[in-house]
Length: 256
Ligand SMILES: Cc1ncc(COP(=O)(O)O)c(C=O)c1O
Image 1 (tube, rainbow, N blue to C red):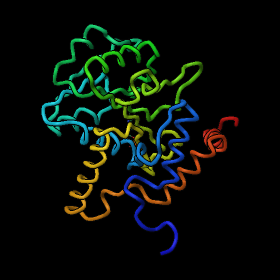
Image 2 (cartoon, rainbow, N blue to C red):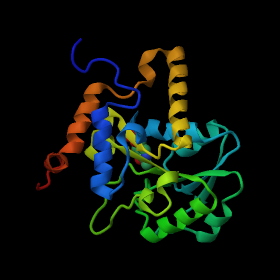
Image 3 (cartoon, rainbow, N blue to C red):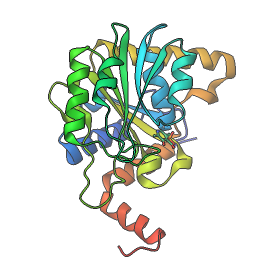
Image 4 (cartoon, rainbow, N blue to C red):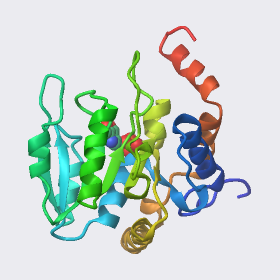
């Protein structure tokens, strides 16, 4: 019974939250307080659900850039909110500026941005991010940034978190996935970093309400954070990225 065999704290084990905050600082210069601004989730899937569930009200509109990852729209609709799809323009998947501007209304609450993007592989440029940031600020909306592929870029292409752009720290929620970063998708460990402002605090509170409700209906197992052991293993990956990279390269038959 001793050791890490009981429920982890609802926000995730402190050491892992510290490591996520340190990762954000190391990789992007983002300063987050691990005590209040980092939440460990059951994969990015739960993180997305938490953001939608916590931040959206019935009738709110959400701007989605399409082709989009397939879980966004059904969850948003199920919550009584309304997806407003804007299709990127192939073959480069560029932003259609006029259509994007026209997609906003007084009911718009959120933009969902997935970069690097599934399924197109697009990595949004700083100029595109600046355009989105300007719209988010002008319409006073949140941006939920699904950045699960943040470390899967190639060549000179660089992933830029929207959160690093001026004015975006307070309105951006950033989602990462240890599953994608370290090729351990079966462990379902994800994380959210976001501002500890009232809306995000409400999101956390609602997550607790939501978890409590599900637990009453289905029992304890369904809504916990991932297992403590998985928190600790991901902690090791995050704190030793060089070793991790070598292991992954070797696993794929590439030279370390
Ligand atoms: C864009 C995107 N977001 C989220 C997820 C879910 O990630 P996780 O396995 O951490 O729940 C996936 C998985 O394919 C994805 O492609």
